[in-house]
Structures are given as structure tokens and as C-alpha cells.
Length: 286
Image (tube, rainbow, N blue to C red; front, side):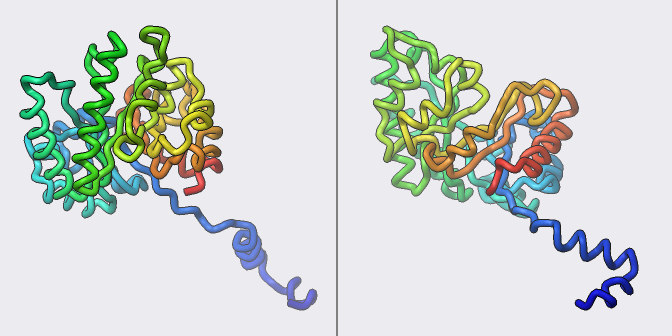
């Protein structure tokens, strides 16, 4: 454009040119939400809750409401349809069973067969067990039994094309018999059968460093739970997520999921603020 023609442009057109040339295209971010974050809303009205969550920019959900072949009281097909109608995918689920003994091993494995079949029908890509019973914290023998159990469940999930994983809290970073529980789990589960969903908040509360774990056990942490004291980016933040996102490739992170357990607002407002925080955070690039 010649200089004399540039001066002839109206201020409004000049403003449009300036904004167009300086604004980078928005990055589409694949942010997931753990529906435990809105657990009371899911109990009272799951249909409208999922619909509203879909309007916030979340791309997929992780359920915490599986029971007896259903998700939040809906068949696998119906719940999947609700999620997809809301513009999201149903990718993950928290569920599980405590460590079986020899007397109920078979019945527990049958429970898992039925649960896996329901999750497969719903198109779920991963199942995560987010707890261990007291045996896992009392002795290395009990912890080893849990690792063997998780390997067995992971093998079943693999056969259905579903990944199986474990979600930590802070207690896994304590020790039993001078061994850190989380380290023992990482070293005694088969990477082909068991991945880890790293809760970035709880590992911090437990006094451990995520980056040190990525360096020591690269590739084991396929999902992050992105959590803070309350909603992400709020006034009571204690987290710096940037280093963990920068090390995502070393960690093996494939997906990240928002979880809010405590709130400064109504839970629906808290998860919307959390989504906006990640959408506007430069360290989140995908």
C-alpha cells in the first residue's frame, strides 16, 4: 500500500488492520474436567450439568459416577450420547475395587470384567483407580499385593483396548519400611499395564517434586490432574503448573484434567474460572 493511500484510511479501518496483524490465532486447548468437581450437581441433575459444562470450553470429561454398569444412573450409551451432545468426549473414568483376598479374587475379577465391558461400550479410553486400602500403606507386602492386583486389572483393560492407571493423593509420598510408597508402586507395576495419573496438587502437598519423578520414571505419567487449593488461578493458589507442563514430553503426559475439590464460589463457577485460567495460560500449548 502506498503511503498516501495509508493516510486516507479511516481510523476504524486502521484499528482493524492493527488488531488483525498483531493478534495471534487462538490455540485450541484440549482441556478435560473430572466430574467429581461438580459432584453435587451431577447427583441432582446430571443432564443439565453436563450440558452447562460443555459450554465452558471443556473438550472431554472424566467420570466419577460408575456403578452397576451405569454412569450417573445412565446406560453407557446414553451417558456417552449426553456428553457428545454437549460438545465433548467421554474419555476417562474413576472407579475401582479394594484389594481382594483369595476368597473373593474371582468375584472381584468378574466385577472388573463387567466394569470394563461397560466402559468399552461407552468408548472410554482409560480407567483410573484413585485409592488403595489400608493394606497398601501398612507394609511392603501389602503394597506388593496391590501392585500385583493392579497389574492383573491392567492386563484385563489392555485386552479391551483401555488403559488402566492409578491416581495419587499425598499419602503415597510417605514411607513404609524406609521405602517411599509411590516409588515402590512405579517400580513394581508393569508400564505396559499400569500408567499413573499424577495429581499435581497432591504430590506437592506430599512434599515431593514432580520434575524429579519425571526424571527418574520418564513416560509413566500419562495424565495430569491439574488441581489447586481451590479453583485454578484463584486468590488462594499454591501451585505453579508451568514446570510440569514444560516437562510434559518427559513425563509422558498425553492428557490433562481439571479437578476442583474445594471452592470459593458455586462449583460450576469454579470450574468455569479454572477453564478460563488454562485457556489464558501461555504454558498450556495444547
